[in-house]
Length: 238
Image 1 (cartoon, rainbow, N blue to C red):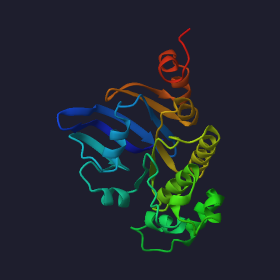
Image 2 (cartoon, rainbow, N blue to C red):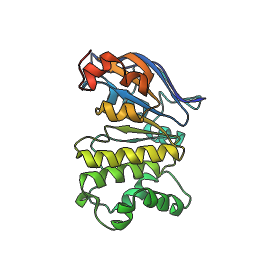
Image 3 (cartoon, helix red, strand yellow):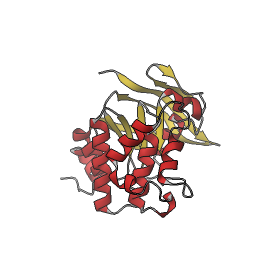
């Protein structure tokens, strides 16, 4: 299977602090890949560098073989990457439909099919099409943030902590959508502190600790790893 994303020797620094330290990983086309780790491990910094919000201090980020490391965020979105940001960050004073259209701001073709597809994925958004996004519940805002990211027709969709601050029953619904989006052909790179849910969903996973990748394997392998169980899954080593 070909890799849609190849990250090689990526480092990210903030001033004198190295948040990401020479990491390398792949995201195969059509798969769900997850990065797990504690707060401050460098997961979000990795995503932000891939989407161009932070310039890497060194390393290569290749999407479908094309180097992205020094491109602008707009060029990266045009290239085929979008991100669902931590905290959702919907446009509170715009309607649901207007938020979806903002997600497609770089397109100049008809949006109707994709809007209808998003409404099929998220029937609740269709019901609230003309409602201001700021009045939605947290779970509904997360649905909208995912749908908005899909509107650019990305090759790779990245999600930063999609379950953050949501009730368990809502988290299950969000992951059901992640499964469905992947089933329909979208490649997903997932950063998620709910390691149990993330590893259950992921084909492959990487464990990050203080800016470095310390473990990798299939989602099942990592879920069964005793060190991962002890550190991230709330299970003691046997």
